[in-house]
Image (cartoon, rainbow, N blue to C red; front, side, top):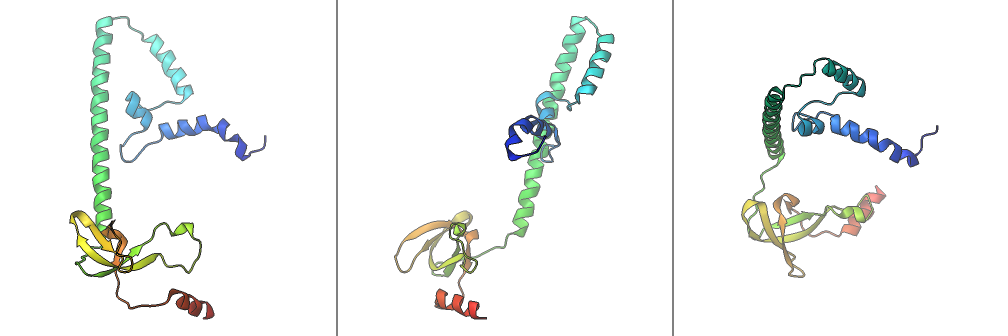
Length: 183
C-alpha cells in the first residue's frame, strides 16, 4: 500500500487516539484521564483486566454503590488538581513571558514607529516591517497608546508592545534599498 496525502482520513482515528491519550503538561493528565478519571489502557490490557474482573465479580449493591461514589469523589478531586496544575502552568508561562518583555515608556509628543505584522501579504525581503513615524497623542493605562499620523491626522489605538521610539530623521526608503542592492 502506497502512502499518499489522500490517506489522511484512514489515519484520523489513530491520530485522535494518540492525542487523547497523550500526557499534557498544563493539566498534568491526558484528556482521556480528565474525562474518565483513569489512564487509558491498550486493548490487550483491557481484555486481560476484563477477565480478571469477571473472576472477582461481586453482586453486593451497597458495596458497588459506595465504591462508585468513592470513584466519583476521586474523579472530582483529580479534576480539581488538574485545574490547579493548569492554573500554575499558566502563571509560570505569564511570568516567563513578562520577564522577556522590555518596559517601554512613551510620552505625549514622542515620535514612534509601528510594527506592521501583516507585511507577509506583500512579499519582499527588503521591505521594512516598521511604518511611521507617528506622534504619540495619548498614553492609556495597561499599555494602550493612541498614535496619530502627522500627515493625514488620522489616529488610532495600538498596543505599546508594537511601538518603538523613532530616533532618526527623514529618509527615502527607495534610495536606501537601492544603496543596499549596489553593495
